[in-house]
Image 1 (cartoon, rainbow, N blue to C red):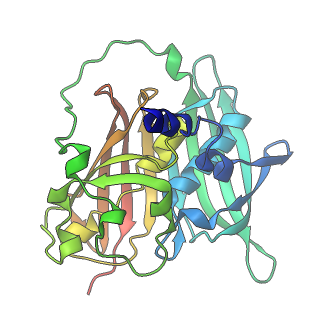
Image 2: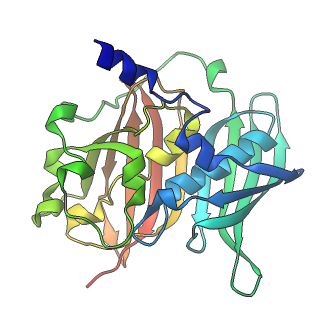
Image 3: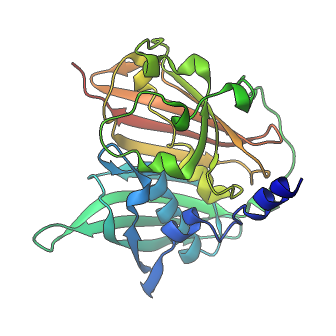
Length: 286
């Protein structure tokens, strides 16, 4: 009992976790922010796209009169690297229930010139002000209990390069989507998992922006390996998540011309669909 109480006491609170510290920005001027991109959120050879989207989401929450992302669309222009970065925001429109803004994340190259990494357009509102009426045919993904799923600590085949982000996540993958780790990909283009932050922090709209892009790529289950860089990612946040782990389901139905789509659904512990996303990603064939 004492050990359980100690574990509960160690759970990080929203606003006081590694995720919050590593997405915190310093405002240098109206609409201008500085941040050091943490190497702790890298995978293979680049900073994770969901972590970067959460940074831009936090900047827009500060710049806009509304605090919750409802929809945010990001175009990933060049790979981001750990180290100093600048975020610039611009208020496009403000209204009573929705505000729209855009933001760009930039870094400096070896010549000291600015290079734009990501550009986003987003609409923000107040999730707590939304009506409770829900009419849906969507159902939570069927994932085995957490103790029957497997995480990085259980020894799936490692990827080449950095896997630092896995040390910051509680990730338990559905065994039926783990064929790639055994050299036997299913070919179905599916990935499902229980998802949380390693320090126990509960989820909020900003961590949902991370969750949609934190699982291994569906390309692994199609039989491909290596980096799958995101070209464009759009996230819809539907409601504020309840405390507890999330269930993430990602599917790919079509790979053509070296590009695939990934459709993600995020479900909370109250069986609510709290976020959806679609991304277009490039794959390396051959």
